Length: 366
Image (tube, rainbow, N blue to C red; front, side, top):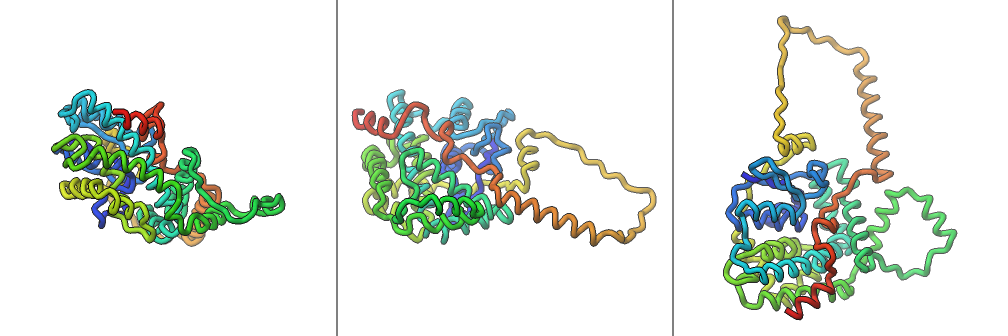
């Protein structure tokens, strides 16, 4: 049996068992290929050898992490949704997957994290509830910051300011403000209404290419699903199944690309809730991956001990409580927790040497 270690989900009521598109894609791949597997929901990338999720534990105790490595490992062991494709179709599939992981991923990140109404009213509260205190104070904002960094690296403006450039005096004052205050404040300044933002036009280019490839077929390459179909589901499902205050991207897909929406629904109807194992801690996740059983020996005393009251108990409690408050205050202020990198991890989620515009031009010539 395979064990998939995946980001957990605040959208289980919507039928999604991760908030990460790569994790959703692998889950769909395993279900459509009829593999025997179980889902481990985790929220810490340190249990993965490469520091990114998803991570796949194979029956031979081999661990693969990241989307492409996990897919290739499954194919090597005979679980291959692309077995019915020829070499030319496999090359096309790789190109179309790049379109999804490049352009459509950016639009999804923008819609979730940079449209302030969506982030403040839906995404951040759901993630905060998922991570629990005190991680809820840090990780949602760090996810937002990583989305901003990825979009900036891809040439998408993360912020639009109507005010004039900051004066040097204002810049100095700004630098003296606590970092946590600035992050919270900037969260409300990001695009309150950007339904006409250029990123949606870019998303339409990618969606148009995918829609033309799918046409009226049941799946992208005929009557049987392939890796491309599972990846398309991984990016379309969070858009179509999660309701947001500003659902610009969802409206575009439903109204202009109904065949893609139908594909997403068709795949979703074939999926069921997987067997879920919730890892309560980082140590539990690591223990499951390496299958290292640590024997536990309970020593019982020959004669029961008489409980005695510690006269310094109150002082110890105050000391420990105060230390924890100082610790959490420090990590919140400095933002030193490692943030998830699965969405923006270029090594795992995209194809080296290919840019979106290059892939689009190649596809148009196919």
